[in-house]
Amino acid sequence: MTQWEFNWTNTWDEVWGENFIARWRELMQGAADAHVFYEPDIVRAWYKTYNNLRDIEPRFLIATCGKDYKIFLPLICDKGGWKDGWQNVIYSAGQLEFDYHDPIASKDLSDDLKSSFWLALKEELVASDDRIDVVEIPRIRDIWKREDNSLLKPVAKAPYIDLKGFNTFEDFSKGLHSKMRRDIGRQKRRMNELGSLELKHIRDINKALEILPTLEKVRKEKWVVANRTKDFYRNLVILGLKSGIVQLSVLESDGKAICWHLGFLYKGKYYNYIMVFNPEMAAFSPGKIHLAMIIEEAIKLKLDIFDFMLGVEDYKFQWANGSVDLYEYEWKVAGVGAGIRHNIRKTLQSVAAIKSRMST
Image (cartoon, rainbow, N blue to C red; front, side):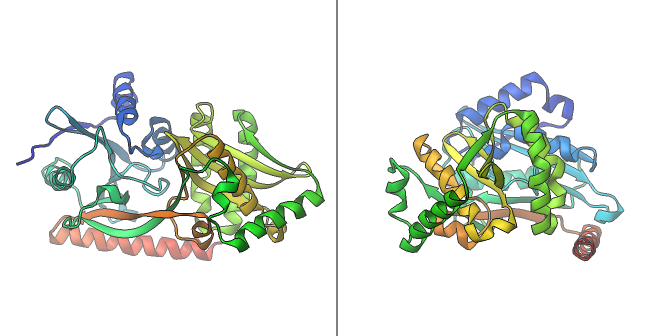
């Protein structure tokens, strides 16, 4: 029988200590399928945003199986108050803000090892000293799913572009629908008639912080939930822009900003995180033009993947040539008390969501 050993880091001082960070980075660098969201600076940006808003404690896990296999999974114990039905919830760091939450494996794992890990994790958490009511790990990519694993439930898809084999944007665009190709060319010409069209990459942190309020304002006007992430964007820029993991670009027409994009560049992949544009310029498709220019740069950089991540919006599939299925690992502790707390939490969350919609 497969034996997993679980090693937990349960204080923030330990998490942000030099020794743990060094081990963390080593695991990330050695994992072929590591996604950007568990990179230390991205997790720290989330921590700095939410640590003062919630009673959260780290349950950062490094699981080992024999000498060859290691898994990293940064979990959080959220000790809810009355607004949460007094539930203690274990979830993955960055729960709302991160598009991917699958664990980081030091090397390729067999399906049997993956399945045994999920089962062992449940046993470990049930036996822990935390009074756990619910465990929620959302948006796990399908590389962690096997058919007989009932702990993982399908929840969404994430489209992407496989860029391998394309030497130029023209090569790639041959696979797009002819109407799409024509529209990109037509809208570029229309914009150039208004003035010069330029894509600017923002490298200076202070300049980026000046731009963020506009991005946030435009995003909030379009999406109700956008206001929750204001400080998170700021922390991402402060912690990740200098290293190049965080990418901020602005599309300008005749010197005027018309589209803003926040993304990530990590281990041969570009992650398409947030894009907003001036609604007054909607007739010129600035988002489409901005995306085309970023994809063209990704091809020039010889990146492997342009990842649209969570969401099945039509525009993503106009570009994408593939997609991955996303799964959720969730279970609730049995018992009358845990069930009551869970129902209270769900009811209060529904009421809060209604109030949020009514206030906008």
